[in-house]
Image 1 (spheres, rainbow, N blue to C red):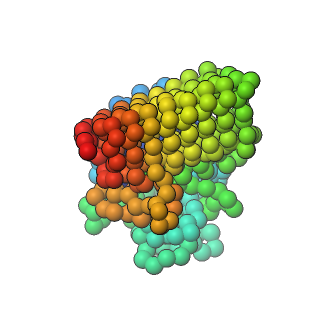
Image 2: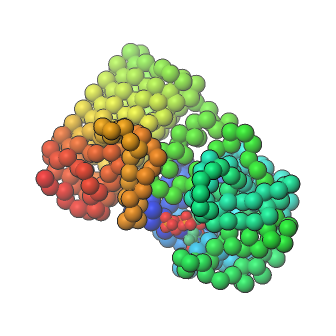
Image 3: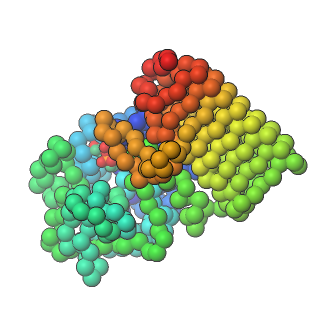
Length: 412
Ligand code: TTP
């Protein structure tokens, strides 16, 4: 039996974050999604082999999986990103094995899902509860079996949906070979699962009460996944780094993680839950508020406040910054006085442009999404829901009220 992570997608909706990293390398509390899948998946069951299917930015995925400590993983190259069904087919053609457990590389799953899938009989599919099933593959579940799969059903309402985990045997290859491309021109694995559902053989493995999951498709999903991970039963806060005697840890202190090699300087306040990665620095005199995630070597300096945001590796909010409900890419430098606005005057939910379309995020509070290596000058203001492309430069004093392209020099 084989454990497979599908990590070949382009992640276009996740730009600008995927301008500088492959989508399965999006971090959740410091751990790339693909590594989290391997760690939890492989410890939940007994597998003969672990496989990662790579495509877009595949080299980077291979390197990172190895550095996470999964040296024995076999990589299968997709050779063209032609859909999830194509990705699964490539694996089944390349790897011999009786039974296969697949997970999408870009979903965050509560750790308990892995055990549930490992103990299920093939063919089966993980079902997560969605309050609004409109955006997902709706699973019609009846007496433990899936009777039908409806892709992006109209109308509102909650339901059990496909969350990217399933278990099949080699016979699935025949179903995949019979697939026709979907309206978006891709081979969809959900179409193949729908065939099994119609045959009445597809088991539903439904999540328990409070088992969270996030399809990390759009930039704000990165914030949602990280927030959720603080409440996963496997998460443990621990303070291994240096905390100055005048610094204060408050709030949900049990969920404060301060890595060895991290430093919290004098007169700083860290409110839990919070994750402060290796080499990260806070303060002196900084405020890190609940649900903030500072990856390795990130820096929050004097009179800077970070709230419910993810600062990736080496990102810096060094002086007089406010970063709220935002994603700050790796090695971004915010000029002194650069602030994000995370709330509209009219209190309505924030919109963001995703693949050219304006999308209502449903979030009342959402700041900016800043691609890797971008820089802002002093006193820059970023309006709610704006995206700044990777390596962009924003001139001092500008009010950014539209998206800034990759590498663009934004003057005002
Ligand atoms: P999707 O979210 O459907 O596609 P994507 O990752 O390309 O994202 P976007 O639509 O924003 O461009 O992918 C679901 C999962 O399947 C994800 O884990 C990536 C994986 N995948 C492949 O491995 N190969 C593929 O050809 C595709 C389309 C997806």
